[in-house]
Image (cartoon, rainbow, N blue to C red):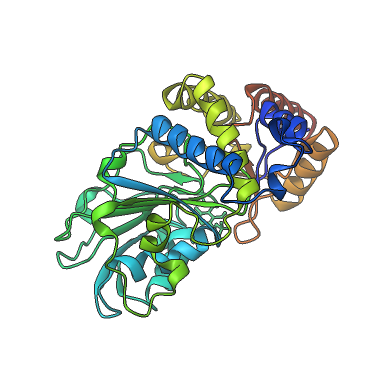
Length: 362
Ligand code: PLP
């Protein structure tokens, strides 16, 4: 089966097999890692190794903490302004390039004086702005972006330069985290739900610049204060142990593949094969996203002949074991999510099916 879901997504088969082999008896301990104390030596080694491998993968500098959190990326929509804005009256800039950054912006308004630096809504979220079009407030605490809009398929290739007094850029990287190298030093906070590229749902990773810790608004819940988790090495309370363990296995797998430069090369090739097939279909399949900002991870497309044929396409693909190709309920159409763990063979099978379907349904 090829799973084209936007999340939770396919994990590397080798990772699932390793987890299966270790499930009941973790490395000779006689117990599952799910049953172990999060303060015991086995889990301690697992979380430390996961953090060290993630640091290697992304070249995370010593200036930044790596935190394993809960509550999904959605919880970070409030945690970010609570930690980075001195008060609910503090300004913050939000660049809205799709549904996820719009949700982040709406949540931030409760905890900051968030304002809209740019919106792609009028263009149906198919483009990103040139730097001059981003209306930045020099007094803003940070500029927030979503590096890859999972529903609309819009991905930043270069990041905007924050013009605020703290030069702080914050990114929701949920759907392209660890899909390519990133210069972490450019960001104040990066956060990502794990369930696309690096693990199961249940763990959210935040990479936070250390000098930003300890400045949360006074009423910030203890669980949303980054300092709580930084001071306790992500063990303030019971962490999502099993999810962190699986992330650790995924990080090992990504390193074994040659690291994120190699992972990016594979992702560019896979996405290229799919976009080329869409563009070569003489308008039969249409990707609305402007070419320079097309996502390597989520490829939305429609069919010129309408929604009924799209339904047929999705149903027939499912019969051939290509699953979850339906576009998000808010935009319709078709969406193929092709995260790290989607093999090239899955994309090639989809492209062959698209050509065949077009020939059969002219
Ligand atoms: N941000 C982006 C870009 C997403 O794709 C998602 C989920 O798909 C979220 C945030 C919300 O993540 P969670 O479900 O972990 O709260």
